[in-house]
Amino acid sequence: MNLIDLLPGLHPDAGPGPEVRSLAYNSRLVQPGAIFFAIKGENSDGHHFVPQAIGRGAVAVVSERPAPEAIGVPWVRVPKVRRALSDAARAFYGHPERALRLAGITGTNGKTTTAYLIESIMRAAGLGVGLFGTIEYHVAGKTLPAPNTTPESLDLISYLADLRSAGSSTAVMEASSHALAQERIWGIPFAVAIFTNLTRDHLDYHHTMEEYFRAKQRLFEGLGTPPPELSVINIDDPWGRRLIESTSSRSVAFGFSPEAAVHPRRFSSDGNGLKAMLVTPGGQFEVVSPLSGRPNLMNILGAVAAAQGLGVNAEKIREGIASLRSVPGRFERVEAEQPFLVIVDYAHTDDALRNVLTTARELTRGRLIVVFGCGGDRDRSKRALMGEAAGSLADLVVLTSDNPRSEDPLMIMNDALVGLQRTGTAYVLEVDRAAAIQRALERARAGDGVVIAGKGHETYQVMKDRTIPFDDRRVARRVLEGLGYASRSARDAQGVTE
Image (cartoon, rainbow, N blue to C red; front, side):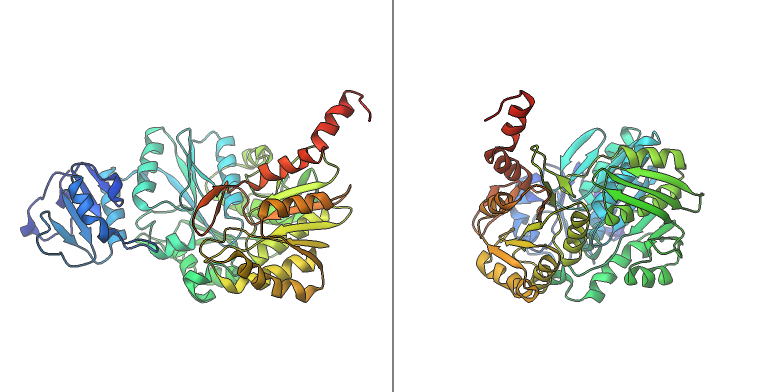
C-alpha cells in the first residue's frame, strides 16, 4: 500500500507517496518502510524520537505539528494523530472490525469481571471470541500481557485481524476512560456498549466527575462511528440513569431495581457462590455462579443483558456463567487449608473497597481484617475516602503501601489515615507490603476473613526508582505456609499429631 491509500486526506498534489510496509507509534518498533505516528503521551513525546524512527527506516512521519526543517521524509500534518493512526491501521489491515461483533464495557468498577463473563458465555455458545482488558488479552488462542486496559488502536486492530484470521466472530473489551478520552478506539463500531457504574476515580486525569462521565459517555455516542446497536446500562447508578436518558441507541437497563429490564427476582449468596432467578426480556431463568456477592450478581446482570443483545439463548448464558470459576485478582481466594477466609482483590477506590468488604463480611463468622494502600501519582482526594471505607467495615485495618511510584509511601499512608481515624477502628501501620500481609494473617483466627486489597492480579510493585516483582496472592500463600497451615493439613491427612 502507499501513503495516500492509508491517509486519503492528503492533498492530491502530494502524489501516491512511498510504499508502506508497516505502521508504528513506538520508534523502537519501526522497521524499514514504516509510517511513524508521533504521539505526545502522558509520560513521553513521540516527536523526540522522530530521528530514531527515520534512522530505523521510517518512510513518513504523521504528526499534529508542523514539519521541522530538513526532515528528509514526507511529513504529514493531521488535526488528530490518534484518529489518523486508527484510520490508517484499519485500512492497512483490511478493516477487520467489520468482520466482528464487538462488545465494549466502561465504568469504574466491574469491567473486568463483566468482560470475563461475556467471554465465557460466548465460548459456551460455541463462538470464537477475543478479550481485551486490564489483566490480559486473549487473541486467537494466545494469552498476551496487557500494557493498557484498552490497547492503542494500531495494536487493537492488529489483534482484531488475528481474530478474523482465526475465524472468531466476537470480541469483548474494557473501554477505559483514558482510552475513550484519547480516542484510542476511534472508528471502531460496537454492537453492544455496557455501562457498569461511575464512582470517584482517575480525577488526577479527568479533574471532575462531569469530565470523567463525559469520557465514558463517548462509548455510547460512537467515536467516528454511529452509536452502538444496543446500550446496556446499570440504572441503579445515578450516572447510569442520566446516561440512559441521553443515549440515542436501543437500550436495555439492568440492576436490582424492578424497573430494570434485567433484574433478579430472588437471589442468594454464600461461600460457594450465588444463585439467582433473573427477569429478562427473553424470559425468566435461573443462573448459578461460583462467584459470590451482590457486586458479582450486578456484573452477571450486565453480562446477561449484553449476551441476549448478541443473540445468545438462555441455556448458553446459564452455561457460560456457571463455567467461570473465578477472575484473576477479583475476589480471588488464597487457600492453604487455613481456617479463615483470605481474599485478594483489585479494589482501589472507596466504592470498590466497600463492595468487597461488604461481600467478605457476609462470608465471615468472625472478625474482618483488611490490608490496603493507595497508589501514588494518582487521585489524592480518594485516599481519605478509602481509609474511611476500610475503617467503617473492617474490625482491623492494616494500612500499607500500594504502588507509591514517585511519591513518599509514608505521605500516601498519611492521606489515607485521615479518613481511617474518623472511624475509630483499630489499625496497624506497616509501610512494607509483604510485612503488612504477614501481620494481618498472623492475627487471623478461625472464622475470620482477611481481605488484601488494591493490587489484585498485579505481579509487581512500582517504586520511585524501580519496579519489583510482587504478587499479593503469592505473598499471602507463602505467609500461610510459613505459619504452618499447608503443612498442618498435610500432617492431618497422614494422621500425624504433634
